[in-house]
Length: 136
Image 1 (spheres, rainbow, N blue to C red):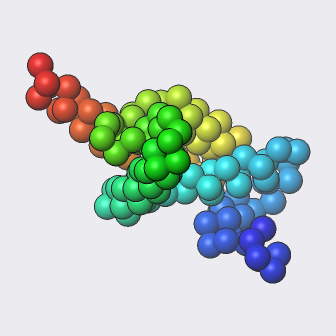
Image 2 (cartoon, rainbow, N blue to C red; image 1 turned 45 degrees about the vertical axis):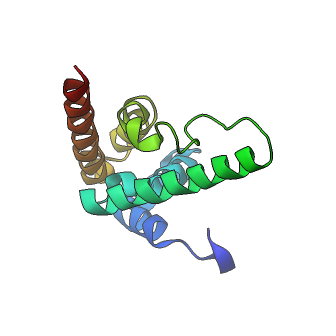
Image 3 (cartoon, rainbow, N blue to C red; image 1 turned 180 degrees about the vertical axis):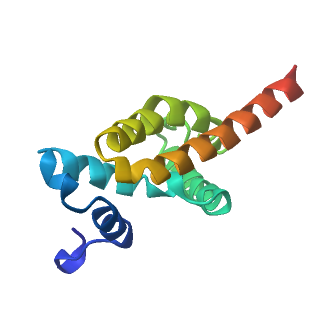
């Protein structure tokens, strides 16, 4: 629940789509909340891409602050190197797809969300393959 005990728009949509199914599992609401936290992964490609760019910039700013404080810059936070946009395929395959597949397996009403996540994963995989081919 967000401020004032209200559901976010994504949480409300999940609850509407899944109805009472969330009460079937003791962890159903936690998994739904994690999926809603990662909801941009199921957005249309242009929206999802903007989210990734914004998250990457946030991480780069954290790296800038670490560098300015004389600290080692955390992985994926150094703007002189590869950021999170270069590792989305791995994030999807290791974190996002297993999460959304498990969720949709228990809550079939979430299948369209899983389909959208898989579509964005395909876009990242194509981009990474093209980048690899360009380096070869």
